[in-house]
Image 1 (cartoon, rainbow, N blue to C red):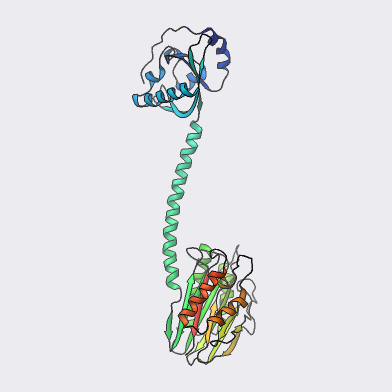
Image 2 (cartoon, rainbow, N blue to C red):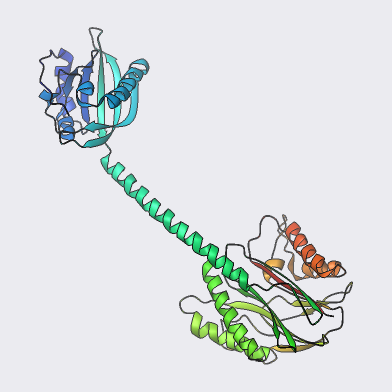
Length: 391
């Protein structure tokens, strides 16, 4: 900053009458004449800049105390103010200690009684606002960085979860088609298609309550527990009982996680199946062109009550060559059209009957397409299905 030198300049009479009022204001005030010489600054302006008024009055303070680049900017503001009669913008005041005070500048161009133009300029200190904005920008940057980390973690988690989702396959002449689609990056649905040696094929779909990361973590943990129990050749009733205890004792604390499940164990011969459901939409068994049989759950939702698994949790089902077994989660059935009508189990039953003559892969895709056509808007729940054709 240049050190100003006081210059004597005659103040207009009207200014002398206003000085007392201008000194009562809480904003910095500067008045300049039509030659851009400072006629007056109040004490608040002195406090804001650290410069005494005798170092400012009588001079073109803009030219004296601003750099050539900043002077050019302010000169443009001056010209606009003269043209428009007023102006408002954010800038800064140079301070005696070399720092810069952020301010809002309000300028008004007027004429005094003798016809000469002058400008009244007020300066409002916005340093606290600017500090708050800087802190906010820092916080936003930290949040953005954290969100980026979370997004990267979710991408990895989605890959892991997709790797656990069942894949289409052929086992002992039985064809299996699967589909898994989380409504978010990761979801609370899980499916499983797992041969048990050469004797049985285990099929399962499960829907953990809620959506997102918490439900996905529980679903992945349930997957591990389920696979371990199935590999031990535990009866399906025991699998449900174990999962119910596991949820209540190991997972649920302040927040209760519940799940519904439909599980089937198909014999290698393709003539018999054991089925067990827990609070889940009924599975379906259909001969091409026939009305699908519904296999209802005999147990309640798992994770809420110790006695959720019923005494007759598992049922024995005879199946025939050509039968198709359909397991799904409620993201398939609990969808609404534009009139607010839910597709429901009966609507899905009709889709299964209509599509049961198609090749298995085409049947799966047709069901998904019909659900999407029924649904008003994008999916709001995870979707999983397992479709098996018995040889």
